[in-house]
Amino acid sequence: MTLALLPEEERILAGEQGETRQMMMEILVALGKVFGAEHLIPIRSAQVSGASFKTIGEAGLEWLSGLDARVAVPTVLNPVGMDRKRWREMGIPEGFAGKQEEVIAAYSRLGVRLDCTCTPYYLYKTKFGEHLAWSESSAVAYANSVIGARTNREGGPGALAGAIIGKTPAYGLHLVERRRPDLVFAVEPSPEWNDTALYGALGYFTGKIAGNRIPFLTGIRPKRDQLKALGAAMAASGAVALYHVDGITPEARVFSYPTDELEKIPVTVSEVRLTAAEMQPDAVALGCPHCSPEELSGIARQLDGKRVRIPLYVFAARKVIEQNHGAVTLIERSGAKVYADTCMVVSPVMEQFGLVMVNSGKAFAYVPDMCGAAVRLGTTDECIKTATGT
Ligand code: F3S
Image (cartoon, rainbow, N blue to C red; front, side, top):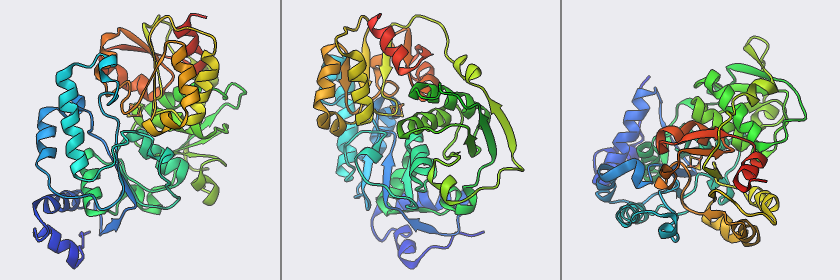
């Protein structure tokens, strides 16, 4: 299979529109050749990871600073290493903050929107069937599975190249025939499937088994935030970029996938609950992926009239925080902190703790390596009870 470029694309590749666009087209062509794409397809939006100075470091900043172009489609930045307004309060060193702002300025010069969130679907409409170039793994799982849009799990440079050219190679999850399920998780039906954090544990458990295959789950009826938690965890413990839930996710409703011939793995509530360990945390972090308005309201209700006895961090997109001022005020009245632009994984703030409790299967997978802290998984209710000691 060969990658065929349009005359306009050939001209970009030849450098007629400048060095940066040429380099970006080279990235897309290289990806397309490696993965057997036959052509490039236009995308509706991009979401670019590699935004925290903690993850890209000096070399990444230097590369970004040398780019000279503008994005061709709406493009959102992933969380960075600090709340851009409250970084001092977070205990972020001045040197880190300065470098982080340089990274943000480099993205801003390219025309990238500085929402700094892994949940761009709360801010900008994304529709069924649209092609995207998103890179943050939970956002990719949500876009593909919950919205029915189409994106591969792009690396930071691949997403940025897609953003600047406005196209991406047509392979993998952009093709309908590559979106069929590979295995079935037959989940034990139970009324216990009403806590979002249990979906994080379910995602962590099933993602490890699924790897990069496309799972089809039966026996559960998750709501949107529960789907978000499920996909984020599956993407983190495995490399799941698309999953289907019988009768719930859009493609499972539109296409009746035949599953009789697929490997079938039973999953019980008790084995998912075992995923959560029994240790005493010294901080609690919620909001991975970033909290929805409903999640902020729920946390506010649960904290009403209580005080935290260990640090409790809540993370959400700045616009979501601004639009839900009442809930945020109630949360912070307890002594908890609600931070924008960043998260428990990409910010250095969590590195000071030995054991962090989270309600997210994704954070459960990443906090140990990225923050050097041990991690315990609990339900949202258990996390808040741990933080308040009540
Ligand atoms: Fe988002 Fe950070 Fe979790 S980027 S998905 S809150 S690890």
